[in-house]
Image (spheres, rainbow, N blue to C red):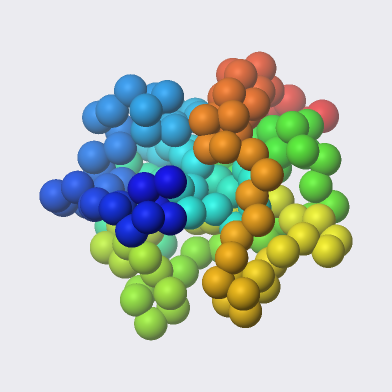
Length: 158
């Protein structure tokens, strides 16, 4: 509601560096790895929109260390399995906006987006109608996904 009313305030410093210092439920962190974490997007395109964030404060993928890169890709796989189980999406968008010119909202800290998709979802409503249709509160999304991240192992290929 704060976002809708224009009361959204960003904390001092890098949001992606601050988030891991908060409690998981408060920060909507659904999974923590050794080098990266998975959090809900505060401004989602769809329910289940995740951001996969390295702990290292770097602006682009080519300077990220190999361990973080490997874990980032493993977390993409884990996120797909969790989202399939939780929402049964028909597809996914996976990507990174690197640099302000590419649309990065937080350009100084690289991160990946994983967005579940369904035929006929409201993908262009935000751009055309300045409206987002999200049928689930963020806290509900957290409560749905966080236990699945705990149960579904990165080694489990189901």
